[in-house]
Length: 106
Image (cartoon, rainbow, N blue to C red; front, side, top):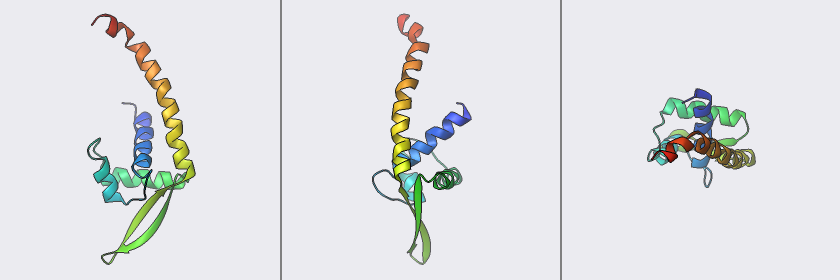
C-alpha cells in the first residue's frame, strides 16, 4: 500500500478511536486491535502529528503516580473524519471501476 495513503488512513483511524470519548495511548491501541495492529511508536508519532494539526488536544492526568496523556478530538478532527467519509465514496467508485472486469468474469 502507498505509504502516504496508509498514513492518512491511520490518522483517521486514530481520530475515530477517540471520536466519542477521550482516551490514552494504551487504550487507543487496545480499542483498535480487533481491526488493525498498531505499535506504540507508530501511535505516538500519529498523535503528535494530529496534535500539531489541531485535530486533537492533550491533557495530562496523574494515574498511579505517573502522568498519563489523555487525547480528545477537536472540531477539526471531527471534520477530518467527515472528509474521509466523502473521500471514501470516491475511492470505492474508483475501485469498482478498476475491478469491473473481474466481476464480469466471475
